Image 1 (spheres, rainbow over the protein chains, first blue to last red):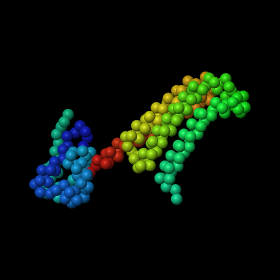
Image 2: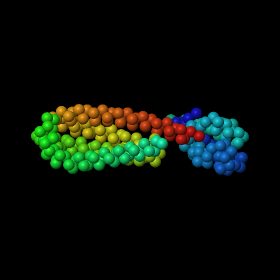
Image 3: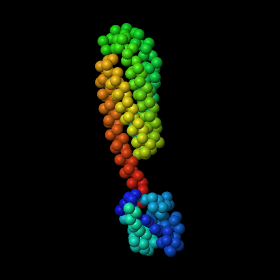
Image 4: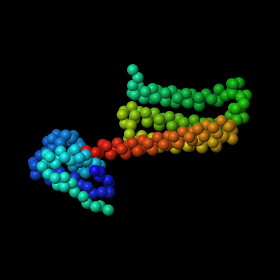
Length: 75
Length: 150
């Protein structure tokens, strides 16, 4: 999965984090990525997300991929 | 034991040595040429030398700038900054300077045939450096993709 500059894939984990009442530090530690990488993900600067990371996110946040990923055609 | 770090240090030292040789050669060439070794030589007699001076020193200047930029590139590599945009820019500049040196020497090839061959070699080296620049540019793209793959 990759996010090209012209594509509108948005990562929305802030809402799920607020629902689960989990901090960024805690989340990054539980899914096994650095806080810096989580920040890259949250700020939509990531170019690609591994399925293993997505799986870990969905497991910790108890949600579906569609709950944290959205698409908007920006062309 | 030989390491990549020592290899880069050796490259930097060699660059410094060649810069020093180039500067010494530039300063001493008029005096060296007065020696019998060159004055009556077949390839580089006095008449040829006088007409070739602008092209020779023009080439020396361009090569000196190339060596300074090469030193900058090597220092970046020593700091582990290999696949970065700055290095791509430095390689682009080096390739264009090689082309400039080729043009200067080819323009001066009417003074001595040696300049023609060195000019062609400089153009060829410029092309190789340009291809290396393309390779590093592609590597930078791949690295940025990898760095931003979470």
